[in-house]
Image 1 (tube, one colour):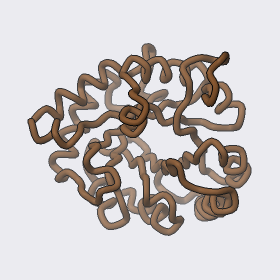
Image 2: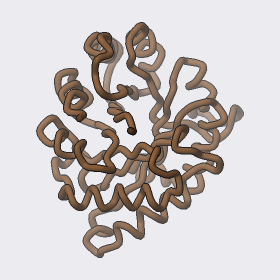
Image 3: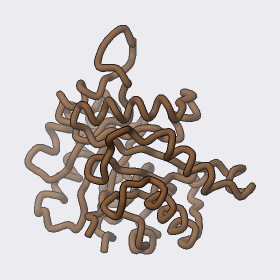
Image 4: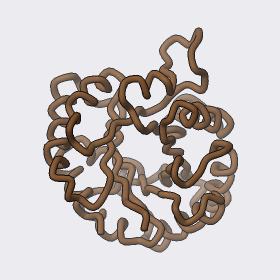
Amino acid sequence: MRRKLIAGNWKMNGLLADGVALAAGVAELAKPRSHKCDILICPPYTLLIETVRAVTGSSVAVGGQDCHAKVSGAHTGDVSAQMLTDLGCRYVILGHSERRADHGESDALIKAKAQSALAANLTPIVCVGETESQRDSGKTLEIVAGQLKGSLPDGGTAEKVVIAYEPVWAIGTGRTPTLDEVQEVHAMIRRESGLGQGLRILYGGSMKPSNAKELLALPDVDGGLIGGASLKVEDFWAIATACP
């Protein structure tokens, strides 16, 4: 049985006081450890160390939103996977559609970052997903399969890698694919990844309290990569408690 993972991606949101309060609020709810899923929050770099401190003593894990492929060097503004591990992070989001679009990140670069993450004992959450035009042209499965092939790290296993499917057109729009469409893509990812039944595949397109239960009940949906709803303790926890 795959344990669900509910991951909050705060994106570029949060100043120090609000970020610490948000992390502490999630940690407080997670302390009883009676929830049915793993909990992860991924704040911006400026909040990482204080977030780690705020969740100490709880079951909440902390992750980064990106990392460089290199261990160190002349890469101004970048952060290495080893630096994230050093702060107490356990995961890192890689290849998010916003990184692919805003920074022109290729599958090959994402693969290199994922391999660096594995070397630093981080679990990479590798993101894949199609744009609206790609879906409308019937290329969803082709596009996602291609991203998988190019982005997954060599030597990755179901225990060491997480995949997040994020239909780009659904992120932050309130729109979601049908349940059948979500299940179809997730089943294909499990099949084409070659990582087997133990692989955790998250859904990442406008999951919220009102639709979390039905999405999380799908056979191949193993959690959520949550954007906007992760910025409110009550909404994020409502999604976590929707895990079957």
